[in-house]
Image 1 (cartoon, chains in turn orange, yellow):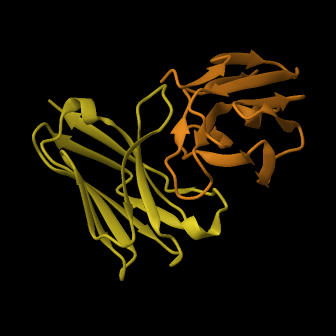
Image 2 (cartoon, rainbow over the protein chains, first blue to last red):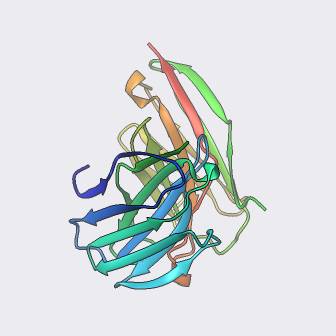
Length: 112
Length: 114
């Protein structure tokens, strides 16, 4: 899937700060960050619609999203915790209502 | 409270058999039910979806059967192939709410033996 690109794909961190990046080439209005821990379903973290943050699930404050333009999404992570080890997926949809969600390939974060 | 439940947790079938994956939900307001297929190391990808106004949706070897009264649906994969081995997530949303929230089940791991 080259329509939603994420970087980096793999990340091994100690208690450092890092940002995940996502770009979608689908012209969608809604962009999401999901967290998927081992053998669990994806869990919604944040949702932006037309660059506005409209959903902010219960997420530790060390995760800060940013939407610099309608096709890009960032996730800034500060002072990571071992429980943050997971795959972080960026996703997008045409609108927020009942449309197909397209996922990127994910950024695997390993906290050591 | 888990709003979308899937069973079984894992399923093994032989090539050529029909795999049946089950899903149930709690919220009567859910009206859109996509199934996502996820291979290891990849993001989930939409496989097939159904809206609550329909009781069946077919796409090739994949068919969703939907029972609104019982709040249950199932995904049937006929003539299963080894390439179908993946995790399948049932999901649900309330389109009228415009919340963008898609509730996922915990998934069924399907293995198809050649």
